Length: 342
Image (cartoon, rainbow, N blue to C red; front, side, top):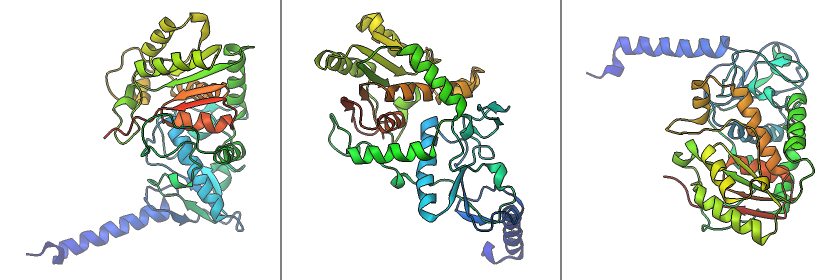
């Protein structure tokens, strides 16, 4: 018997379709995968707002950042006004209570750290006439200016793609992804505290923990590989200090053994001493640490990395941010290319 021809099957199909229609019509921020239009009211009839969403719980902070940036570029190309929704579509960095931003309080995890993209917030469009909800699973990576070549190239040192590409990245981030008042105050305070009058700093980014086993991501170097390259570059390029960015306490310990302690700059970000398994944000939750504070520390480290005179880094989102935000001011750069984890 063909089940699809039975009366019960037909009734179930109609009930399912009715439920989908109900969700679409009466849920403001639904979970429908594809990009689609919503009508919230009659406000702003001459404008179209584009709400940027991501499948929960998102990913790392700068993965979310580049997701937003890609969708922002797409929205602008369509003449839409982009707005990030990390309040109804939660990420690992979503806190249960309001977070102070320097100009108010918010539950929108994007606005914990950044200003609204184009001057409008979710509160502004509660009764907007034309609202487009973005695709939930499309990162729009092709929209992003890529600051280093494809990982399919041969392994080895890969210099930054081009001055123009980096300048374009910096221009977009500076215009649309601005730090909010609280973030700005914090990172400037940290820069003064850790860098002070120090100059000629080599920035080193080491990613370990959850990234080492991440499938379909670029293979990160081991601590030994990162340390070996740092020693070489520090001597040959005559840098005066090293700023180490890492979530691994083991990497901090090894660098402090290899270099004179006063030459190594390390922020006071929370680090993982013993890693077993799981994603870093999950570990933070399990240990009852503030995910907001952890995100702020990470973002601050990446900003400080962008302020160095040189960089050694794996191919990760933090590197894209640092190289792009540096805006062609590094005098030396080295990007590990060790293939992709499969």
